[in-house]
Length: 313
Image (cartoon, rainbow, N blue to C red; front, side, top):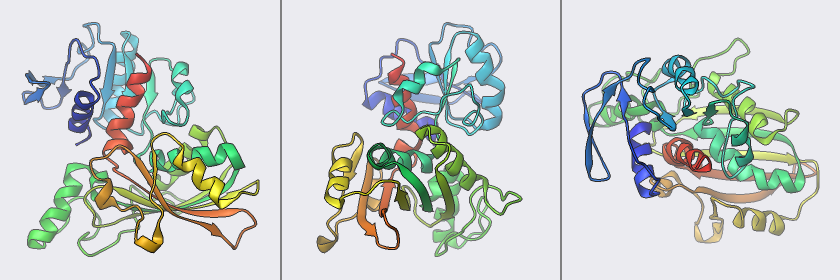
């Protein structure tokens, strides 16, 4: 799902490609790109022996752990979509609107953050610069596309025939499942741990207090997040909204009297991060509530990866 969208985004953004190579297991599929047909090759240890400049990986952690170092050793810069390298101290974790200069720190591998983290930090970064974030409470409402093609099929098959889920732990139709990835000993899931650790790394703020609850909902595309933030400094609400409105990649939709606010239905197929329901948290001296929505397959994965590649040009 992400790999196909990467190709779509590369074409849309007119990324300069002299030679395109597509790898997968299994191989053999024919894929159209920019009016030309390409045959998918089988990935192996010799796949990068042809002067490839950039490789966009979207094949899971196991493949990335094995083949990203091989590609990097042969002079290729890897932009990896899996979680395999994100917390490695030698691998920058990049959201171009937030920390583009971290790309320069790469040693052959650059990590693309978790989809939920990308949209969150894109919205939080301008606020952190202005008011310094002290604490974050994330509550996510994540689309089934976050679980890949099989996650989408679970919802589609459940709607059509009531079929039992193959990916999710429980039926997703008409349901909310507070369980994404595997549970850890402390009761948090790996998805929740990713958001905590990746937020701190991307913002270069290891002392920010972060807590998370991640929930899967029966929506095809587009993750939604209720984000509660506590700042170190006071703020004016009008100024805070203006900061968001003037930030790259952010679209503010905050007119509750007209029923205007971000929704996953309206974010599908778009590369922006939508922010609304912006209101002061009166239970804190300096707190704010945000509602943040973005297409998890595009900005949350494919588009962010292509944007990283653009920084390498």
